[in-house]
Image (tube, rainbow, N blue to C red; front, top):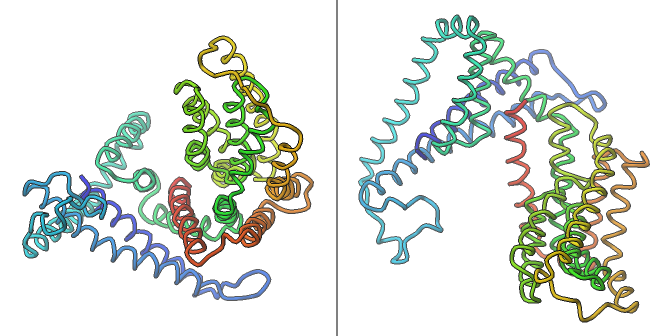
Length: 427
């Protein structure tokens, strides 16, 4: 199944390399230039095409590697893959040895089968087009059903949606217009300056986590809410809201706050159900509290204003936080065994100390969100200010090293590439 998945990725990268190269050649023929600096745009698009070509070539190697893994599984190690984490405890020498000739032959068979499928599809395209246009409802149902089959074969969701969308365009628009749309729409998205907001906010979140700003927010929330029953659960919601505003990611919120809050709540006698439910519910705030990566993603797909969506999400975010806090406050009283009585409450000196530690985090959030709401900055400019501010905070706290800087850049690049791929194919 993984061999099929990698072969599908190869088809996608090959199509993108082909169409982006054609798009770049068209720009070069008409000597297209940027609006303000009058720089030729074709070289940049050729560079993107080159990246797609290199990726397609690398994907061919991955097809052969996945074929080798499959052959090794047939030899008796069905769980083995090419991942380093899956190396058997006995060492790399204990893995089944597969003949290079057999691997090469199998890879060639896979590539030939892929080419044969493409040829068969092109040959059947006219008949399929007639049927699809005459039975649009049945075709739509078929596409929805086919959406799930490739997912079972480990084909990435973004590639599944992209290839199915291309198939539908080929059947209803014809080969030329469909491929033209693939190249034009893809490059229109990749060259959209508004998309720069994604890596900026992701970078802001990575630097903020590295600087310990998430811990400061959680500690401040705990200090303010420790007087109430279920205070640690309430603080978890507050910490999730603050951390969500820093990163804009639900997954990052759950992973980071959950790592701190879950053990602490269980250690203090909170029921595992309340602890897990609080972290899971609070994690959803990462996608709602502005600036939110999912809102940016939605705005790009629907061509809506990112700033207006941030403003629109402010009231629902406050409402969600208030309702979560209310639900926890009611639950710990209805089910007293779920949370212990707080024996200590923070005094004003502790609250002041927590504010001093978290002031830079609060200031960063105020500047980023406030500049968008007041119209001082666009969302892209605010994201750049946030990334720069988080970097300065991490630098002043002595958290910036060569390794940490490379880690932040690597995480930002990997996440941005994933989001670009999904957004690109959904367009």
